[in-house]
Length: 332
Ligand code: AQP
Image (tube, rainbow, N blue to C red):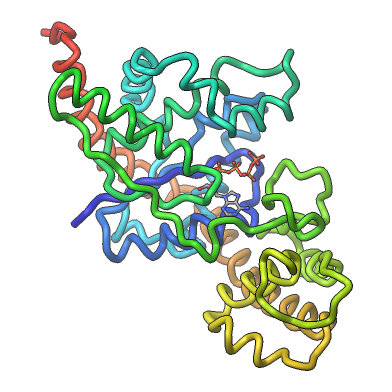
């Protein structure tokens, strides 16, 4: 079986709809076809300030949401990044292979550091894409399910894997981004030119999956559309409506052509009312399942412990190979 690897940050508490449609949905699908490793990336979370108590709670909460979304610990390996120390260890080696200019070109760093402000930006935030390289290469991953915003980091991963292999001999598998075109970028409901993001300026544009369902329904109903009246999938000219149609089509498994036909001659109000209902029907059981996992922390922690053990077996083997290749003296 080919390998898949991906990670999600535990920072915001609730996952948002962009996280789910762009990434987590693909995690669930790939556990059927791949030897899949998924992790809650707490090392990445501390690139911006975190309250320790909240970080711990949010790490469990992220794992609970991944299980609620459909990850099955029998069919994939679910773990917490800091439980596998090899990530930081290989991360250092990869830091030493990366050009400063090369790291400076990462657009996510530019965006995120701009949001932090120059005085508050850490070196960890600057080098986090390189830690991500190590995350992926440790598992010799073939496929990395992510949203469009991560494409550049997967390119960096390929570049560094090739550089390492060229310099020290074949060691790492070159991974490919697994980006599903239709849902690669879910847009902000209030600003359909911007990515839906937890750090949005306007919370009305962001659907948090763990919010009260009626709050999410209200946000859908007040989504920005356009002054036209036709319901048509046309991302360039009708970004707001197209975003709603994408969400609708994906959550219900309806084809876009069928959806357009269903709303032929109907107004935006009808589309929004129906989608609000679809949203409520989806988040209600999701929230209940998440709560069930949270109510049983022993089971949750045991899933994560088993996951870390499985992950470490793979990661330790790769790290040992990499350490040997770069010329580190083995510890006796
Ligand atoms: N709007 C989106 N559409 C599609 N995919 C998205 N992802 C994030 N937003 C969208 C994908 O979700 C996965 C997990 O991302 P993360 O752990 O990096 O989450 P994040 O960066 O904290 O999420 P945000 O909202 O993007 O945070 P900001 O903007 O504040 O940094 C990734 O695979 C990502 O592509």
